[in-house]
Image (cartoon, rainbow, N blue to C red; front, side, top):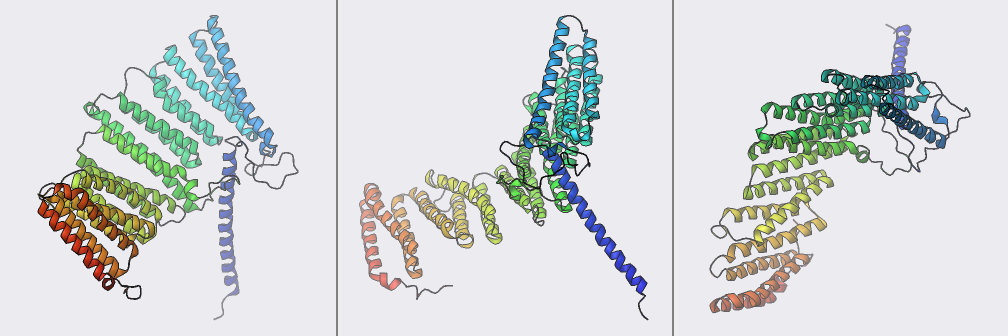
Length: 595
């Protein structure tokens, strides 16, 4: 049966309409992102020496804005825009100073009673906010300056009415200050003004201190702080103002630190309710300043929001650098959270070790989850490093001495093998740093101590052998070039130190050390000849010469005559045998069979 041409045409039209709708949606998202970036550029004056990207000049003296269709001051010459930016700020500052001087003069003259003074401050705030709201949208900055001045007047008025004049009760003053904070957040979203949100954040977080009384309430302070930070985080999630984010970070942690300092000493004797309130605040801030920015970045990457293009004179262009705040917040928030939590609770190191181990698992899973998205894969690396850091800290808390060294060596080996498998230099760097700590610890054990228990057959000696064995496996399996040579050189020194520590404690131990060094050097020398490895042959010869030096410098002075005879005769004969069989042992490159 022939296909109905009308139905086929309708299907094609429907598909075309769907494609056009998708294109319009993508264009609208791109345009909104561009408009948002253009608005953000207005929140700060042009940087000194910064030039905006050149583009076609508009012939219209006041071209309409893409967002509102109205004329905007952006079309003015750069110097005129900068001048307007600073003139309105200087103007509102001078106006507020003038009002303050007038206010003080009136008080000195006895013209104003406390009630009139508070009413004057309230009317001033209302007047500035009202005038600012009536300013046309194209003079957005001037409007925000007036509104910000009015909000500041509200905070000052509330402080004076409660603390200086005692005209209102604490609940009334607190409700008034909170209302000013809510108004600041609402107007910042309505007027697209980051400065208003900053005023709200600073004023809101400072309210408990502006209205401070002797009857402190830590749970109330923490709860209120979390509410204010919830507001700032909501504004940040919607607008992405990083200055507001960092202001909230500094203010939130400062409030909790003040609460921690004000608690009895030691903190563990404080009321349980206070400690739990402080811990809840710590967890809230951890989630707010670690998870929220991460979620916002993930959502934006999923929506395909374009990354802002840096100015031509900016050198920072990599995704890692553009999202620097995410990396800094992820690391700092985690460490501060752990530190403050450990300061609040008196728990055993083993318990904290398990808690930290759980945190390492969380960050490891997040790193694995983020690594699948190419847009934000650079963030997964930072979380991977945090996971490694927490894992190492957990081991430090859970284990001691020999066991700790055993576990850290295994962790370093795993990191090296993973870095080699993934060809990731950054993971390799973290492994090198951890190995640096292990090497310093191992050398301190080898050259600044004595054998513990039976020589060679004791726990310390076995752990050190494990560390050196792991290092040798890593050197041959995961390292190349200079890194491998450095690791093998350190390993060679560690082996010599291990023999020295374990055997020197025995009767006539220096003789056994000399014999062990000589046999070890002989094995290296034969291996170097059979494999035709020049560097290894040089190391073996150097070790044999070290044995000779020890014979003359140490053994002659400390050993009995019979040992001197045996050692000198034995090593003299050994050198003669090596020289005689040198050619028979040595294999050229053509004779060496590569496995």
